[in-house]
Image (cartoon, rainbow, N blue to C red; front, side):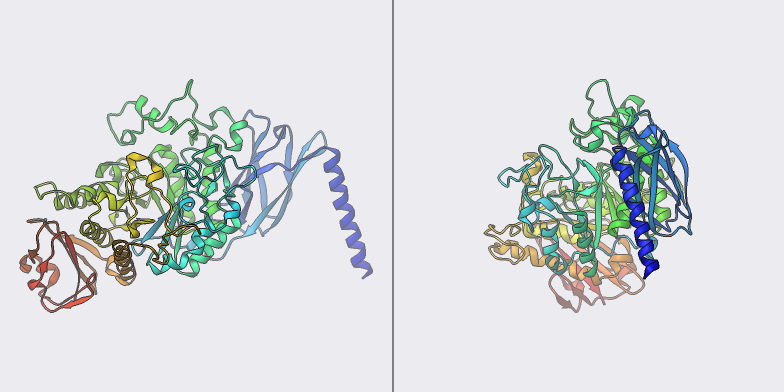
Length: 621
């Protein structure tokens, strides 16, 4: 006991000596990002951004087994240093003290934590064709904790009467309704960005980030987010994080004191992007147009980040890895993918694929044409002159085709032919089965509105998205016929989910107050999504489709053990099943089937009368 008391006294002496030295020199703890890291990562280099007054005038030093300070970089701003560390594979977890010396005094001290990497982290499996993704805007889904609606230091306060204001939804609100999400058959959740957006107005959407390492306190805390991911995983639900590399919010802390003049893309006067992302793939594009597209700002409150700056590039790459490790993510959705520097995006993807070989990332490529969309998808043979290494892209061409197809009369290129022609161009992709496909999203008019509020078209379109190639994504509220036109303002396509607030008279989670049509739609979505979980032919089966004839589009999904036949009738009247000999390469003489949407057995599918504006989903026996 005497020895223990001696060591305790010695330890306390050194603690007090260190604290005295800190206070005597007026020290403050620097801001360091990433705030901590892990041992056992495949890439052993780590770059720390250190921010404190006059930090560039100090000399950093550290002593920690297996960690080496290999480079110290200055940017011209005396308040920043960038430290390059080498973390050996045999380095252990612990607290690493970094001293910042000046004139033989310790001016700053930072205790940097190295955590032990969770076993198997690198082998995580990302989302894929076996999933149906639910897209949720947290602010508009459910208010689980009214106490965080207005938080100290947050500029915008909650105002549910303002379509473009914050309404109070949060992470707890989504977590509280995971049972509903699971029962509906969703297997993955994509939340719009949940990181801090401390801006005076229009901050609810999350795309103007003011702190890349902190969940917005009006949504919850970093711990709340980790618990949310854990709760999802317990139900077998994957979590996809929405990230933004192209821009940040004007209220980001570094905007008051940029690390360097080229930290963001700056112009003599405010210059907006031309939003013409096809210039990236256009062999005839002018450099003026390309520069304006990639370096122009999205808006006056969204500074454009310069990924050509090496320190910014490392910052963004490490931030994405940090969130995957910290939160245990299953995927990333990268916002405005074409607007960032494409050489940098390729570098990022190569790093992510090296660290997580089976992880999935979908890039938002809001483009109208198939070839221009495919330009951003990975291409091993570099058919477009380079390989993006991006495993998944958003399939806007298929969305636009489906938006029109179910309203049109059948012609050589319209009606069902629209769907056929988009899919006929899948040769442009290395793997079109990983395209994320969707009837609508948070930037588009609501799907039920797009379908002219016609229940038959609504069901037929959803049947197509659930059974064609790709990874289906469904926007919250689609299952209860939420309406809204984009041209009236984003607030109207992002209305609150009914039942997410205690004062709501209609509750879609329980069904109370829903109309007969809403209940019918909800049950239809629930049936198909839960069936799709078990329909492995939709997870790994190939697509074979037949040229539409007479308003009838027939296609199959095939694997070694299952055959699925889908019939879409785009006519305004019932139509007899087409002659089956045309499809015999897939049917192989079989005629018995189980029709999924009607839950009925059919002894001979050749006798079926296909109702107008409807679909048949046939499991062939």
